[in-house]
Image 1 (cartoon, rainbow, N blue to C red):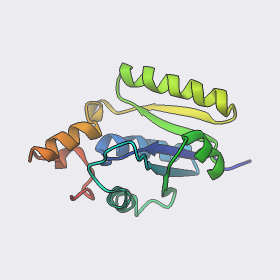
Image 2 (image 1 turned 45 degrees about the vertical axis):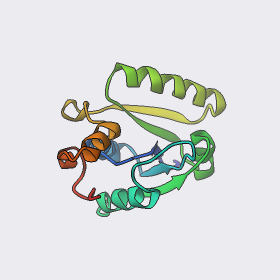
Image 3 (image 1 turned 30 degrees about the horizontal axis):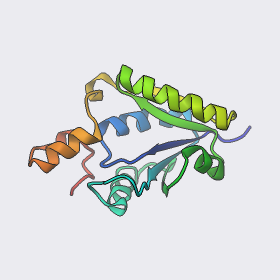
Image 4 (image 1 turned 60 degrees about the vertical axis):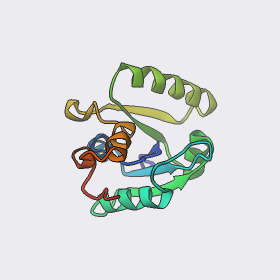
Length: 153
C-alpha cells in the first residue's frame, strides 16, 4: 500500500491556531503532511518566507510526520512533483467552502488522481484568519492569542 501523503499549501502569513488545528487533526489520517509555504511574487507578504518557514518548523519540531517545504507555481504541479496523493484544506465558513470547492474541482480536472480532503476548522478557531492576525499585529494589538507560541515577530 502506498503512503498517504498530504500537501497542505498556503501562504501562512503567519501560521494561525486555525492552521495548527487542521494539521494536528489531520495527523492521524496521513503518514506524512507536507506543509507547503507558497512563494507568489504577485502577493505582498508581511513576514518573509524564511520567517514563515521557521515559525512552522518550530511549531512542528516535535512531529516527525510533518515536513515544511516551499513552492511556487501551480499547487497541482508541485503536488505531482512531490508525489503526494492528497491536498489538505481547512474550511472555516461557507465562503471558504465555495472558494475551495471551485479550486478542488479545477484541480481534479487537471490531475484526477489528486484528491482534496477538507477538514472543518474547530469552532473555537473558525473566526481566525492570517489577515485578521496581520491587522491586529500591524495596529499593535495582542495577536498572540491567535497564533502558535512559536510566532514571535
